Image (cartoon, rainbow, N blue to C red; front, side):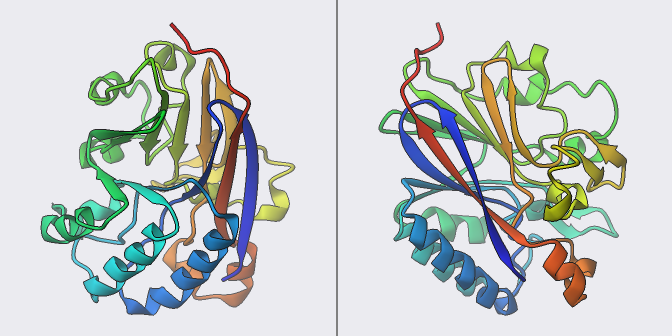
Length: 273
């Protein structure tokens, strides 16, 4: 699968961030592709690497040590911030069995220079990173109207003296002006939508929108790209892995490349009161 880099310049406290999401690691068969991503990230020399959910394809995976070793290599480049998506919960989707792999996550938490945030935050220099874990009940209703996001966002801890960066796997209900007015968030990093299955060549025509959501709702408004809502920048990556049935076909692989997002935050701005 090809890899393409997307670059965004935004205002804030000066730093460089690489955003990836939707790795969907399952077994060591995925490592060859992940090593290509690793080599690509090394070239950009970022200050932070953010993984916005779906590091794993499901709770129980094969060859756990391979993904741990890959994360160790990733964290040798720069500090890595990881949040949790919906796929980390899946044990058996057909039987609706859900649960986190706490043993594996404990191994990941012990990696030097890596921060796994499960409804937690960490302050590094002038940056407050927040990882919100949306429960499976949210993903079951995310495409319905009037989803109350405040009960999830009320869990976060922002700091008016820091640049607040929220990792939230799904962007579907968070791109709301009235909602964002309530919270002191500077930047939100998302994944989940796989770009709405919009090929890169069509992005200039279909700006930010997508053909289909993960729950198979047609024509979603926020599938990829950079949005500015109220005082908050929102960046949605289409992910480094595309849905599995597309991966089987070479032509479709070339249309739906892996995306690595490079975010250059430049020129200081005044903090919000």
